[in-house]
Each structure stands twice: as C-alpha cells, then as structure tokens.
Length: 304
Image 1 (cartoon, rainbow, N blue to C red):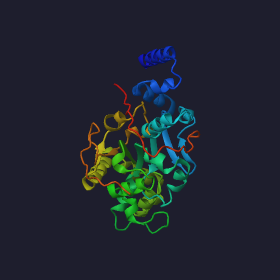
Image 2: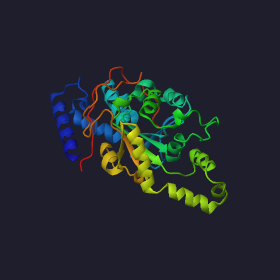
Image 3: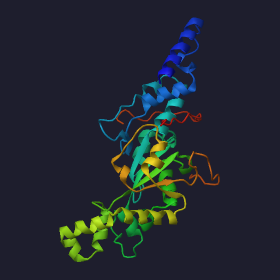
Image 4: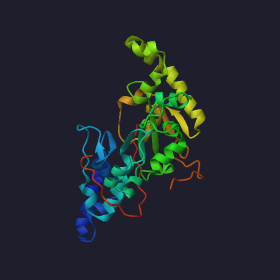
C-alpha cells in the first residue's frame, strides 16, 4: 500500500507540472491503485445484512464505509459500486423457508442494478430443517413453514431465492452456506415433536438429544448427503475454501461449523467450468443509482 501511495503522489505531481485542468488526478491513477482506494473506503470488516431498511452493517463496532466517493464523478460511481457490492460480504441468514416478499423492502432501498452487483453471499441452513424435509411425518402444516420445497436446500431453490434479489447465481464469486446446528430454531422444535414424549418433557434428556444430533460426525454425514443430492454444492472448510475468496481477514463465530459452497460454475481459481448454467431471469448504505453498463473491476484478494 505504501508503494501505491508513493506512486499516486508521483503521478499527481507530474500532472500538476503539465497543468492539465481536464484530468482529475484520481482518474489518472492506475486502475490497481484506484481499486485499492475504493476497497479501503467502501469495504467493511464484517458482514452486511440485507434488511427491510436496506443494507446494514452487522455490528456498530465494525469498520464504517465512506460512500461519498461515489458521488464525485461517473467513473468513480461505476467503479466504486462494483467494489462496494462486489467485495463486501452480504449475509442473508437462513436461506430456506423465507416469505415470498422477503426481498422487496431490501430492493426498494438498494435498487435492482446495485443488487445485481453482489458477488459474495453468506447464508445459513438449518440441520433440523434438512432432517425434517426428509421426513414424511414432519409437521409443516403451520403457516410459517410453507411447502417442503421451500424447506429443502437445493440448487434450484438457491437460484430462485437469489433471483428475487436480482442476483444471478452464476455471477457470484462465492456462495457459502453454514449449517446451523440443532438448537433454538423452529425446525428443531418441530423435530422434537416427533421425538419420544419423555425427551420433550425432560430438559436433561432434551439437552442430550440435541448434543447427540450436533456431533460433528453426524453433521458431516448430513452435509455429505446434501452434496450427493445436489451436485453443484460441495462440502467445504471455512479457512481453506471460504476465507480465501474474501479480500479481508474475517473470522465469524460460525467458522467452526460445517460449510457448503456452490461450485456449479466457477472452479477453484475462479475459472468458468460450466458455461451452460442458465441464469435466472449500513447505516450509510442507502441506494445509489449505478450506470446501466457496468465495467470490469479488479478483484482484490489478500496475499498470504
């Protein structure tokens, strides 16, 4: 970063000598340096949460984003928007069993074009939900559950869910899904209803029942079953397979969970391996209109 700063000073000094009033000094910087500046100003160090009020930072303590640079000129807006939405982590939480209108308030604040620039998506999938979806006797008649097709994690569901946000599944650089252990979610409560009545009524037995289901080997087999069913999903280790695609050091509490990544389109180094995949038709992060034609942007990755 120091050499970038020195190079920028050198370029601006040369422009001042030539006294060219038509060139904004920042625009004359090499694209690599401009991208580094955008990254420093527009990328936070934690997740961004899609909410009914638009995109919001996950915690008040995380690094702020300074979006004023997007208002300086059209080039800064076009390039900066791709960094803002392409390099931040957008965490959608539980990805199954969402209401059909879940995306509407978010898109109303962010805008369709900006949402289409999102490239890194985190999500969660309940282990209990996976088990319930395989059961013929699961109690899914309650209105907050909906049909089993919305409970089951499939590539088709992922494509459909993301399309409601105007996000194309093949365009993502990273889609990482952590498996929520059995716990205090609605699916676990419904699964308990299928257990022996003695387990439901005795707290100690309930804890043992839950601990037994949350054993790593058991959750690992559950993930293996998902990967066998859905060929586009691959079992992953957070530090080896997820963290490497993020441009900043991020250690979420969920890093120790079982993880899945979508690899139906991009290979290990980001090369397209399936061109036939069909695309489905912050407190300071209010919606900013982007240009219709987005330019390619440099992808920033950490160096080990």
